[in-house]
Length: 489
Image (cartoon, rainbow, N blue to C red; front, side, top):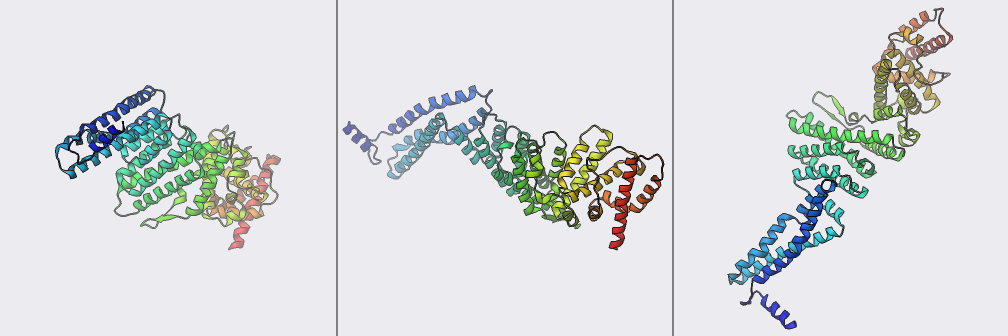
């Protein structure tokens, strides 16, 4: 036996004239004899579950392009079986090159065999993740990612790994500023958004959510930078704008879903991550040639989602008292000297409230009144702020009525607040609101005329006690507004 091994090694010597190159091909045939049946068995198993398992398509991609790597496998087969045919050239250098190429082919063949063995032993998740990570072909990336989002059998850890790698790939595509690659990024985001509710949104951790926020800022910044350029590429701008829109939709969908979860920690994760993002980018802006300023924070409408959810049954109490940042609660001091985010919050609140009251006027049975009451109660957290809330209800009521007489005679409560005893500290807040929104500006501007109308209404004999109290309260508010304005001149 030892003599046979010695003879074989001697024959493998490159310089040996008696070496039979057919031995190299024999080794290749032996390896293929092991590889081919194993590959057929695996592929047959994958194909048999293609209809019932959404992972099957992804597995086919991973097996062909990564586990076996068909292109390298074919080259290795050529190297193993074709190179021995050149052995007849009795030149040592050529024979050395032949052996090196043959060994490389054998290496890739053994690698494919080893990967298939590991696949059969259950190491599929590692191969899937590694395959997705190394994907560079744009069309393949789109198809494979779509298979991943459509999968219904992925584990939580798998989903987390895919999202992490997905965010990384979107970031790389946005950096290219290449139309085709940014378009692929837009397509990828569209597919992700469409399949977000298939168990992926609950696997997002704070890091991944922060990365999505960062992608949104990058897409917005590049989009608006292109927009204000004189000779901008409108096609490229359109692709970046679409990416920004898709990322915004993803974030809004996450918030809308997490707000109504029994566990408020998801909403807490969202708002704490959003606040960190706002602290960094709230005053970021781009100025166009006409000196118009585009503020980044205006691209979000998260507060409206929160306001809308407040009117729905099931909104967790801890959303307002645990998830929503205390720094964004509206006290009179903050309203009088608003930061950019407080200003944004006030404008979004007034717009939402006006639109809601308009819908409520057409359909009194909807949940607008309940939502308005809950939002104001939580957005204006202390007793002094409740004075603000009461005046806001008055202003909304006036806006929603055809005229002052209709408002006074209406039985509509516009909220569940009890009468506050003193509005004096509230007046500067109303003045501050008038500088933010036209509805409040008109209320302050028309205060003298409204006061005259109320005096005439108060003379009517048929007014009940409730309506006279409403007139008295509104007259008190308007009088203080006029006095405040006169004193500030």
